[in-house]
Length: 490
Image 1 (spheres, rainbow, N blue to C red):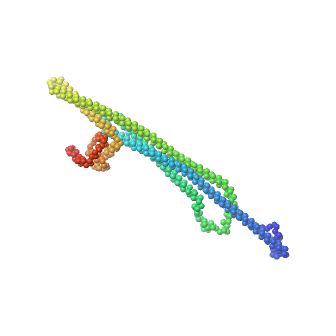
Image 2: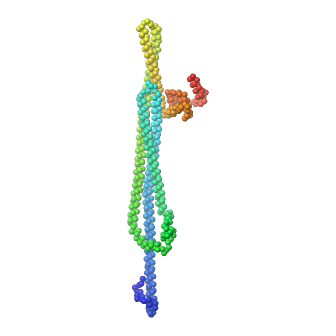
Image 3: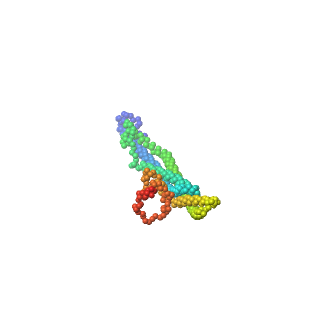
């Protein structure tokens, strides 16, 4: 750039430049060249200084932009981590409550199972009593108060068993739902922790993902790999430097919008996390409420079943005691009347025997009277026979009812097992035989039947003997006993 104060004239010709006319012109020419050199140096230094300032501003703007991007990325990762932590804390609390609910539900199911087992034992006793009472004589096999009490007790126990089974199945479904929810929460918590770790890894510079190689064609000016550097005089690389001065203005203009969008995204993430936490809490509360209701229903049902079973059993026991007392009283009265009838028959037989010896057969009236007395004696004998039959029936019924009073759950189960053993065919008598049931098996094979079975005889109520019986006592062989029974049968 030429200085206006330069001594060089503007109308200098090439001839003056080539050959000065005098010494003054020669001196003026040299001074003009030196002034132009000074002005050119000053202009060049000014341009270089401006370029350095622009380059420094561009570098600072790039660093500021990179710093803002890192801060925004870090803030985003931290916000996502906070969101995950909030959901994880909620999930952890829900998992703790679910574990407590599982323990409570399993405890309720245990109570239901125990009560069902207890009710099944009572049901076994009731069914066994009904089976035994079905063997009463025909004259005594009528529907009495004890029959109604046993039927009512059986209905109560069966109904309670169904309710207990239904509530127990409901408890199993609740436990399964709780475990599924627990597994989902545990898996979701693990996935969120892994996602947090992956997000935090992106903030470490040494763990950044390497830039993939370019997949463009070899003839393209950008076909070099990511590690290669372009030449310094490349025009393609000069374009960003030319546009660099405008870079600092762009982030400054877009900063409010980016900050607003970042705040908006953070608020949305927080809302989503809060919604997810609320949904988890709502689902967990539903399951916990279902668990609480199940536990409440379990407690009420167990108490109700115990009370109803106790009432039904008490009613059965009262009717059974009343029935045995009544049968014993009637049997005693019948025996007393039978003794009176027997005494009257013996006295009448002796009297009629004497009268018959002194009877005048020619007297028709006396003969007719003797025949009437004999008919009356026959009627008295018939009454004695009926009384004896009635006494036998009362005795059998009383024995059966007393047997019912001695029935326990163990005896009922043993009786069912013996019945199952005795139903085996004679062609395979040893099929399914168990040790300790040889007596029952021999009775089943020989066809022997008894009124008292299942260990419910009078001998079963006696205390065990202190002296142990020898296993192989003389005459205790089964083969010897079978031979003796066959000899007596012949």
